[in-house]
Image (tube, rainbow, N blue to C red; front, side, top):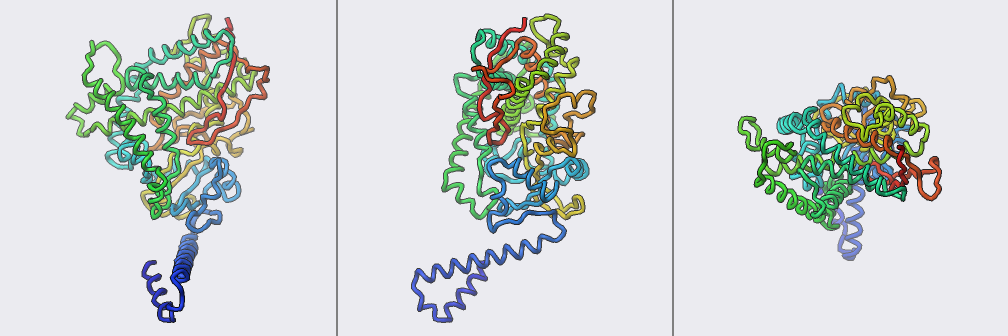
Length: 511
């Protein structure tokens, strides 16, 4: 393009360019550059329309960004209603497939899962996750395969999840006690559920909570930064803007702050003495793996930190938001609450608490959790993937390095897959084969395929246990005489789908 500009400038010079003032020369040059960019864009657009998926019209430079609006999950669903469940957008200079139906999701996540198993190279995750050396954002390859295998076998196996049962039950007991101490006064249920989630994760990962060091506040800044728009990830030639507006500087500052915290935690674990009886936390386990020279895989300290951050980022906001929405839906639907309380009361048999081993008997608890996750997918747009090779999807040609976004929120509300999709009806999951494991593509709260969330079992136990015990021990009402049906369900905009306003309740003992 620079060569074309030079030639055009020379032609203008030969036609008495000296008659123009310096200002006019600048304006003419800018006009020529804009014309050339538009010409290139039009040529590129027409060339790439051959056998491409349906695509809405786009603007030069920014592409379809202007059509995402304040709620991308809803905007993409609305666009898919017009252009189809597989459509092509251009986010800046990045071609992006958007999937909004179970049929297309099955085609991609089952038939072409390997092709779409890569992650795009994103600036902010690179800064926050030590060069994207974690599981969530690292590129597909031998490194990722070995790291995932180590984490799944050593941190997230069924046996390991069970080993933290005492931690979960103790934290549930603290929440129940807090409600008891409230004596019927108004309680911020959202804050209480957030503390429960954070405390369990801290104790599982670090062996203790870190109130005094403000870890929860640090983590919130970290997650907020992950959801910040980065110009350079979509318009690489304008990446300097991220430096000028201070985005990269803020990301580096947050990264250094958490790195300092994690270094302190790891140093403490290196020096601690154990009697061999206590349950190992995640840092202990990862430190043992670091020392094991027989694995054929080098787990350096930065990778250890990146994996720990994955646990918190993947777990804290998603588990909390799932719990918050489940409680909100139960309070808004007294019929469902009553039916759930009947089940837990029958199984609880007057005991002080429902233990984990009883969760398998609670079919309606499981149905309630699934229905809450269907309506309120914690990550409405699953983490972007990237095509490793050229592939044909549903008859359309998709070139390599095309990004992929799966709208799990839209799929969970698709009338083609669900009867009364906007209604909260847990009964739809009773006697249903639909599970979390990514084999039922109309229900993808944890994704599917190689890049599906490996921590789903850990998350579900956390959610089911506290939900069963809360409704077993207490009745809930809204303060200030607000009727259940009038509960505000406004959604806040962000990476995860969370309530805009906290859930305030009054709890009264059931017995």
